[in-house]
Image (spheres, rainbow, N blue to C red):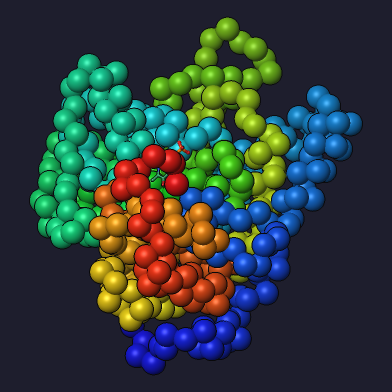
Length: 425
Ligand SMILES: *Cc1c(COP(=O)(O)O)cnc(C)c1O
């Protein structure tokens, strides 16, 4: 961490003045300048380009083109937009497809990986994974006659860092699949993709990375790491809009060896022959199932532009400065009120979010949302998550967020809220 940070608004504004990405904030709709939005890790802000594009898709393409739209770019959209996302995650063309949800894509790819290796029974993941991912794995196990064992690696410390030694020990010759969230949702811990993938491959296991919290927030190099599979969200740091379709990646080297567990016409070799028998489409295309949500998918395509323009290396540089400064503010402004950092101190092990922990975290989070015009989110048992989206979050906003948290504590504003969690944020 840099040494000369200062806990003042003037200092934060100075960081803004030096920020080479500052002008990207203008590319987003920000109608309430007083709102401190620190939840871009759950739902990114709205890019202005997406507003214009959504209007065009609805009025011109849907409204006038009607069915002709499928011949004017809709049909190819999953692979065209997939290749654009490929540029953000270090994937060469023909390996990334957009469609369905993260959970569904996990189901398809993890099942395919297990079916490819019928003699191996071990699935390795960790307690840091997103619960939906664990549920999907449990369901797959049930569907495949309960032959598999799901091994859950735990934490090394206060739920901040996974137990890497235990993870490495647990990769055996009978491990079929290692599947992890690249950046974990609660603490923001960032796995070393290269290392884990190499270790798994050395034992003959396949690796599937969930990039939901890392795509658009940290550089990802799927091809260079020789990852087998990946899945991820487009509505978090990619700003694709609520419920925008997810993506999946299948490394070229195994595309022809595996089949999807769901055979649909979008994954059929010649869908317009309307054959009565299924033949898989070549490549990753076979993992598509049926008609995709075009309005949402094409709006998301436009929303990718700021990320593609800024580039992941510049975004990462700013993101590290933001999470470093936020960690500094946590210890300088908030520690006296009983807060502690719930994320790795070392930026090399951290995504673009930090968690700050407090036993009254739930009530403090409510007070921030209801009274202070600050939007973080709360994750059990005591984490207030603060997400920093380097495209549009300013250092002034980070400072303002911490200053308002401090005010909630000084004025004990949280005391009037119930201790129990009753709502979704
Ligand atoms: C956000 C997120 C999801 C969401 O899955 P959906 O099926 O799109 O709702 C899944 N996994 C991880 C790791 C996430 O962060």
